[in-house]
Length: 229
Image 1 (cartoon, rainbow, N blue to C red):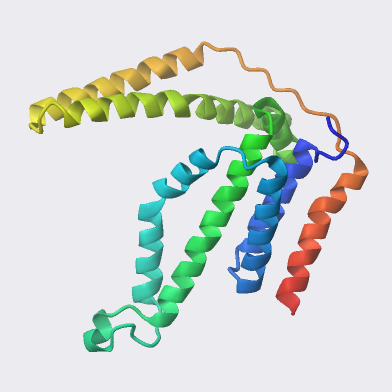
Image 2 (cartoon, helix red, strand yellow; image 1 turned 120 degrees about the horizontal axis):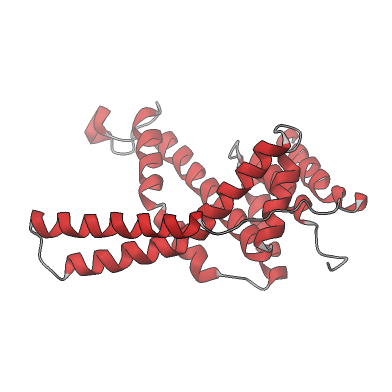
């Protein structure tokens, strides 16, 4: 491993600290997080930006739900006074936009971790990180399930994409649609059966260099300083 490359355990812990720092949606913390994430992507060579854009777009309905909940359920000055109580509040929409921005930043951070860390090393790092809370058997089970989930994402996406294209080109009748749903279900069962027969081996990595613990500690100290100002 490159001496200047953070250990996988350090990367996982740093991600946890980043998510915790973003949770309060402070504008100053969000600006700090945006700058840190941009620098991290630049250092890594901007990996997988197309897939990151797709991940962000897949959550568009969640963004809308957040805006609706905050916009219409937060007291404040109506955005459209003429609508009275039917109007979202200015404060609510502002809070909602902050939460959406935080979610995008967290998605970007998770994506960067998965794109720059070898899968087996990442799963092993997750096992080490969860060791204070889970026994070895539970940690191994969790890691194996996570591995199988990650393996199933791409094939399942392909199954759904192919089926949806077929549905769009073959009419809209209930009988046709039901047939395609059965095809999707059957394809997923076959994929699950193939995955169940694959051996999975997860090994815990070596301990990270003590000096590298300064990375998440410095990040935590930085967020603490931002929130205390």
